[in-house]
Image (cartoon, rainbow, N blue to C red; front, side, top):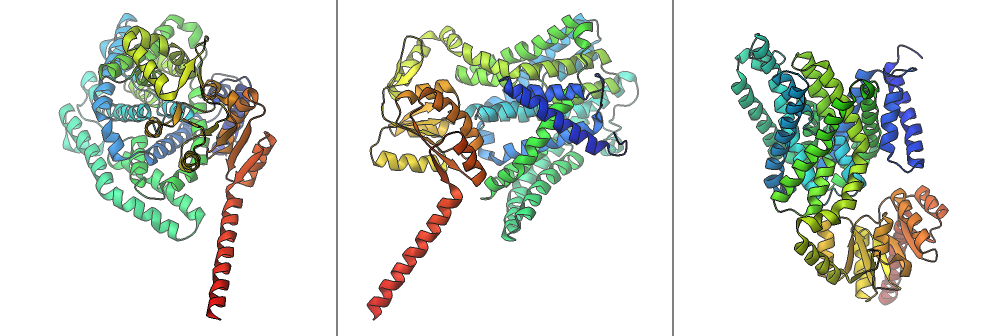
Length: 584
């Protein structure tokens, strides 16, 4: 292996191993994320063979975090962010406090001093940005109230961790008898500020950045994007999107002390004001996915399997705090704010892991001699195992949801079930699986721009119709019109059963991505082999892929656009001919 190309070697080996192990995991019907983590373990320093450059991998992973938060910001608005502040701010603060107290208690039990125990507890209190957002996106929850609360919660955690990282050197200086200033910050050192001054200065810098983005960036960033688009160069547009995302994130971190992820989120949020925000999201998607994979590889590289043998009981206690202590605190907080049990369970599951900020905080704690290396190893091992188990937590919570709802408020649970049954005209069979009354009906998967237009036409023709939609807001609006709506992911076989797929006449896949439609097609063919399936495709490659899956009717965007243009030309020729005859 050449020694002068560590960057190339890290990217190539990391992505290749991630692909191999991810494909194996997918074949075994488990999350590819598990494969990515195992790929990191294989190319990490604790296993024989090739060892990737860990520092480079972490930096590449940081790009993935930036692009992921930028993509989330593109689908967020200031109004949506402020709409969840009432629960996100107190909820995140109380949950951080609860996890820190639990971690501190464990540290004291293991004989560590108070400072090291508190630092350890703080490292267990913050969730991974990448894991949380990937979980939300896989379950198509980003546009729901649960998704907005989770993102708002994540931002508050991010701000708290930024403040914590700024204060840690000052605390270390006080404890070790050096200085009460932060030597790594020239401005703070020059001013000679104490801890109170550091807190105030940090808050002022964060407030200045947010104000700058909301006042100036809200106008400048969309203007830049539209100016680049006017050039007609797709390559330049893509480059401009990435430059804005990475540039704002880098500037936020270096000028205002804000985290790279938070800076990227606000860059995306101000860019969402532009009509080109959807295109910007599409252009950044491939790079975002690639670097997100490198993030999980970098996490796997940190894992030392010997921790499982050397400190099994301490590791188990750490894992219980991360996956049960944090989750329980989040659950009761969300329920205290009168949100539904389903929302509380989703937030709890999404927070039942730790990630990138935990690594940074643990590493800084050890370097400043605030925390023992043993505590850092437990944080890293806890992160790996909690990330591995997080998909199982989501599945488990979803299975437990009916039981928890019935125990917390049996009367309300029965009333909600009765109302839902009335509104959606569902019946429940002996096995508890809901099924629709309709037969010979049409099912539309996704009530987006395409699905809504199709549904409007079918409703006008008074055809029996069921819509499957995973976003709560459009589902609620559609249900008010009297249309039967199934809230959930159409790729879930149980959701398709609830929509009466076995008795349906036609399934319309209005989803924008053919690869996402493939999972639904597989389920549909199993439940109703004679079902007519109509799917949309954005390219010839996608159309060929859908044909291989047995889809009979494919609407190819390129062909429909060309057909529409030709139709307009024909209409124009006809009108011209009529005008000529009338003139003659």
